[in-house]
Length: 284
Ligand code: CAA
Ligand code: NAD
Image (cartoon, rainbow, N blue to C red; front, side, top):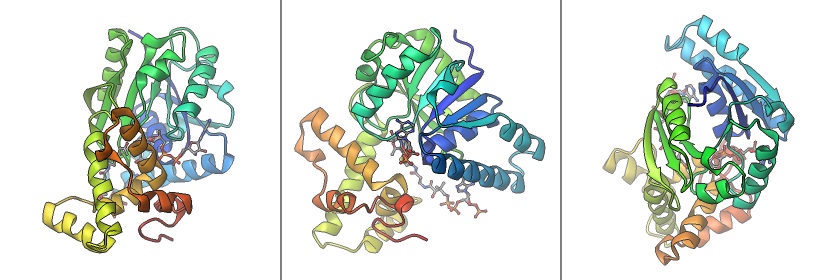
């Protein structure tokens, strides 16, 4: 089984920064890469704030906080990942962009290294097929916000080996998270179930049945969801929600997954949700 000590994470957005944080807290040496220095600066500040919160709540000690920060380095070039035992990709939800990155990483990484994707919906089998190491490619799908959410959905592509699966299953448990295995079909389990609900909530607003506040309140108070579906969509990122719905729609060829025109319009306007300051709601 591959021994995982050094972990590369590519994409320092909301997911990549959380993945880097939990990997470093569990004692791994972590290199977080983003092409944008501003994103790395934002990720570093977010990780520091999150770890400080955990210390204040006595979930980790000050020593563990310092050890986690000491395990982390930041880089703008993928060349920093040459010695990684595992790379977790968490860049934009776009198959063409991910395939290009997987090809590049396949040429760069040492032969035994595992390539994992945090994709929400895209075929692991197709990402694997773009490399010369398809048996060492796997889906490692964390949930947002990564430091708080305990699920990791593990997606086995058609060619993922048992050794790769075993290594990622063990790592997930070492992060104190619960792995659940899904087979490789569009949206896996999580987003096949979640996104139709979010899309229907958007249609409910689009068709004038209720305001975003009304829809969210019904689902929070009526169904005990921690966040209403439109708040959650803003939190995930409306660009990401649209990308996932397009993968479901194209992948199954079923009109029940057609993205709501209102979602498309918001994404066209650049209203990508909380990270952009505006989505169904506005944010500071
Ligand atoms: N690190 C450390 N602490 C954090 C944190 C972080 N990253 N994020 C929030 N917290 C803290 C908050 O600051 C807060 O602390 P205080 O009690 O001191 O104020 C505490 O955690 C609880 O947070 P909140 O009071 O804001 O709210 P909450 O009790 O509702 O919990 C939540 C927050 C866990 C995010 C909860 O709202 C929730 O579970 N929401 C739904 C999340 C969800 O569904 N995620 C999955 C999205 S789908 C996905 O990820 C897959 C995909 O492919 C799209
Ligand atoms: P995000 O927009 O917050 O961040 C993406 C980051 O990737 C940005 O910092 C961007 O600069 C960087 N990036 C883009 N292309 C790059 C490249 N070629 N090399 C290096 N960095 C690059 O996105 P996010 O919400 O963190 O989502 C990232 C991935 O995680 C997506 O595949 C998404 O579907 C998945 N995901 C998202 C959520 C969620 O709730 N947002 C949950 C689970 C999985």
